[in-house]
Length: 313
Ligand SMILES: Cc1cc2nc3c(=O)[nH]c(=O)nc-3n(C[C@H](O)[C@H](O)[C@H](O)COP(=O)(O)OP(=O)(O)OC[C@H]3O[C@@H](n4cnc5c(N)ncnc54)[C@H](O)[C@@H]3O)c2cc1C
Ligand SMILES: NC(=O)c1ccc[n+]([C@@H]2O[C@H](COP(=O)([O-])OP(=O)(O)OC[C@H]3O[C@@H](n4cnc5c(N)ncnc54)[C@H](OP(=O)(O)O)[C@@H]3O)[C@@H](O)[C@H]2O)c1
Image (cartoon, rainbow, N blue to C red; front, top):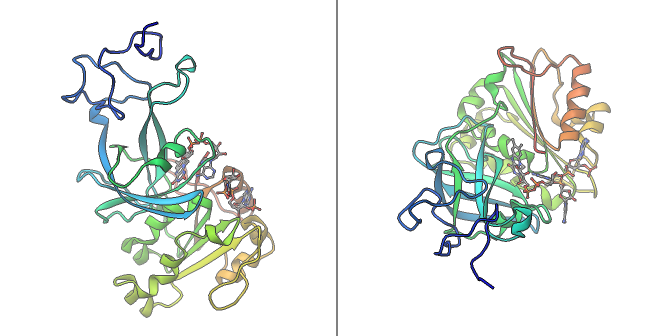
C-alpha cells in the first residue's frame, strides 16, 4: 500500500510532505505549484503574525496578543478574521489539512502596537481547540481587512454610552473603553458584563483599575463616575470589592425590573443613551426587542440609530 497521503478531493499529495504549518503564500519552501488547501487565502489578503502573550482566565477562557502589521488599522469595536492551520481529521470528510478562519473582536486599543483578543474554548470547536494549543512564538494569520459596525460612528449625538455584553462579547468594548476620543465624546460609559460565574469576569481588574491608569486615571480623577462597571453573575452569588452584592440575574431581567439602571445610577433613554450589545445571539435579540419597546432603534446603513448590535454565533 502506498504511504503517499491522500488530500481532499482524492488527489495524490505532493511528494514532499508539508511542514506542520505550510507557507501558504508560495514561499521558498513550497512546491512550485502548491496545492490549494481548504480555507487557503491569497497571500495578499492576510499577514502572518506571531503570538506574543497568552493569559488564561479559566480553563475555557483566555486572552492573547499578536504582533500587529504596521498597515493594520481598525475602529474600536471592529473585528478581524483569524486563521489557524489544522492537519488532523478524516480526509474522507474533507477534514484533512486546512486553514480555519473565524471572526474575532479586537480587544486592544487602536493605538496599541499589538492586537489583543479574548477567546472562549468551545469543547471540540474546530477553531478554538487549535487556537488553545498555540504557544507564544507560534504564528497565526490575520486577514488584512477589518470588519464590523459595532462602532460609535453608527450613532449621532448621545450623552451616555452603554456597552452591554455577555461572555467574550466584552472584547470589542475593551477597545471602545480604552479610546480617548470616546471618553471625550460621552459623559458616561457604562460597561455591563454578564457571565455565569464570578471567575469569568475577565478584565475586571483592568476596568476597576482605570483609576490607576497613567492616562485614564487623571481623567477619572477629574470626572469620577465617568466609567460605570456593572458585572452580572448569573449562576452564583458574587460581591463587589466593597462587599455590595453584584447583580445575580440576566441583563434582560435587570433591564425589566429597573435594577440595571439603579446599579448604573443612570436612566436608559433614547434621547441621551446610545447602546451597543454584543455576545450571545439570544441575549442580543432579547435586549434589542426590550429596548425597542422603549424607543431605541438599531442603526442601519446611512440611518443613525440608538443601538448597535453584534452576534457571536
Ligand atoms: C463578529 C464576530 C466576532 C466574534 N468575536 C469573538 C471573540 O472576540 N471571542 C470569541 O471567543 N469568539 C468570538 N466570535 C466567535 C468566533 O468567531 C468562533 O465562533 C469561536 O472562536 C468558536 O469557534 P469554533 O470553531 O471553536 O466553534 P464554532 O463551530 O465556531 O462554534 C460552535 C458553537 O460554540 C458556541 N460559541 C461560539 N463562539 C462562542 C463564544 N465566543 N462564546 C460562547 N459560545 C460560543 C456557539 O454555540 C457555537 O454554535 C465572534 C464571532 C463573530 C461573528
Ligand atoms: N466547560 C466549562 O466549564 C464551561 C463553563 C461555562 C460555559 N461553558 C460553555 O461555553 C458556552 C458559552 O458559555 P458562556 O458562559 O460564555 O456564554 P453564555 O451561555 O452566553 O452565558 C453568558 C451570560 O449570558 C447570559 N445569557 C445567556 N442567554 C441570555 C439571554 N437570552 N438573555 C440574557 N442573558 C443571557 C448568561 O446567563 P445564564 O447564566 O442565566 O444563562 C450568562 O450570564 C456554553 O456552550 C457553555 O456550555 C463551558
